Image (cartoon, rainbow, N blue to C red; front, side, top):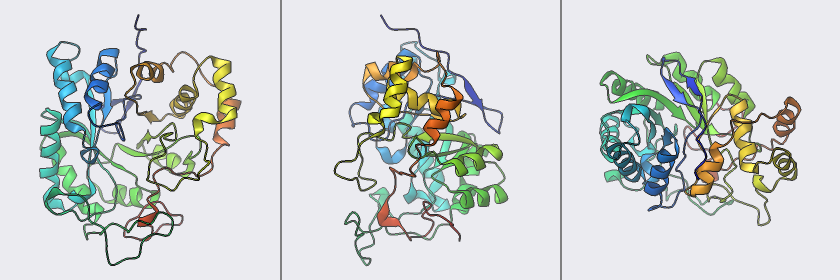
Length: 335
């Protein structure tokens, strides 16, 4: 028997629209598994799905959405679809075309929230893979060369995204992986305020200063990798014996106390901080489990304990790009 799906609260955005506070993330989900996972999620009661052009899974999400609508599980207006403008499309003349590709992939005539995936402009001719800068040395940490960086200013890219709202192709726009300086620059110069900043947040990277800045400026925080990404992706260099958040003894003790999983404790931590959470899974059992976080609350002391676990441990580090134009993950950033 499938348990009743919880009522997921919404976060009101600064443009008056509402984004469900909990949804399905799809970054690093195996290709070929996303359609079934997204369809199962919708059938279970998920109403928010996060995708991106560069993930290569927008079409799978679109197939799931189309099938769910056709089979009567949901109406399009009941779903919230977020996707992202990839770095190779930062030239303002490419923004509209990139959005059209995502609309086609998702089989929809509008996107609920369209995010600039990252402030950096990568060079990627013919919509192909982003090129590497072969003239630069490889990064000592991971042996990779930096990306070849284009000359588009993310502010000009954002202004092109504003036109998508005016054209009715997207309801809301926002950013992802922007630091305080970069987001402040957008806020100082935009016509349409970004509704969210999608950033990495989890117990080992609480990102307090950036979260506080966003919330103080009425920009919602959408947290990716809220479980610290236990799959250990290649976006950073991992120590051979590195333990994941899901193995943390303090979190294991809390999970036992509440008869929950560590994943549920991490998700609940983000929910109580007022964040929007998009944990990734293609496992039907975990799809149900991850959403089962609205029937308990962590005590204030437990929230403090988890906050104190912060190690500034960033999963999406991309060390090969340190020093390139607009690389956001540095202290005392300036332009």
